[in-house]
Amino acid sequence: MPERNVTMTAVDGTDALAAVIIRPGSTPGSVSIEAFANGMSKADAAYVLRHVAQQFEAEAAAEQ
Image 1 (cartoon, rainbow, N blue to C red):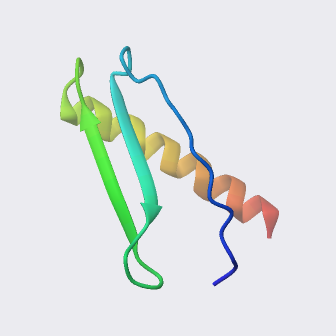
Image 2 (cartoon, rainbow, N blue to C red; image 1 turned 135 degrees about the vertical axis):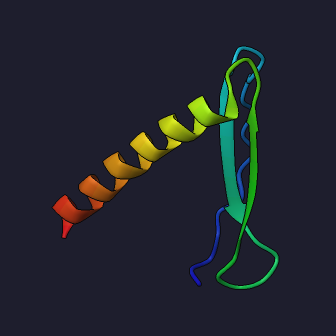
């Protein structure tokens, strides 16, 4: 695993309808996921996340 540059980031999520934060996990190769939906249904948040995932997959395929 490459050496990580540790930085501090502040995000003002007070008006966020939903958020997902993905951090490195406590064991090599794992991740820690924090998510919430506030002000929109979890079903609607899941729909948006699937859309974003499809965009990420298309961009990754185009990079290959």
